[in-house]
Length: 86
Image 1 (cartoon, rainbow, N blue to C red):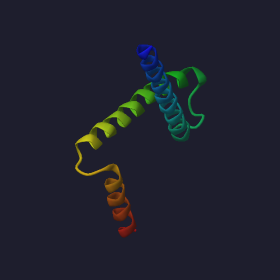
Image 2: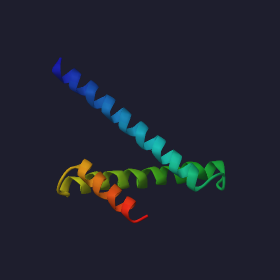
Image 3: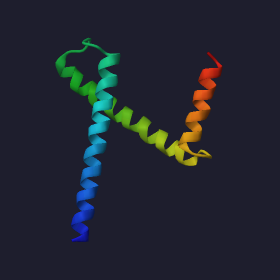
């Protein structure tokens, strides 16, 4: 029964992750290339864009792992830099 529960949790996690990546990549793709591409080529381009988007997200997560401090501290540092340099 434990294996079934772990499989269900893993499946739900992967489903949520793929939905988030697809929706985020689609929004960015549609905002960068609005109606300039034919319908047939759009599928090819959006697949490449999803791979790039996922790679950037994964790289960012791996980068946050080696940075000192926490994500909240990094957010405060970036927002302080942006506010002071307006």
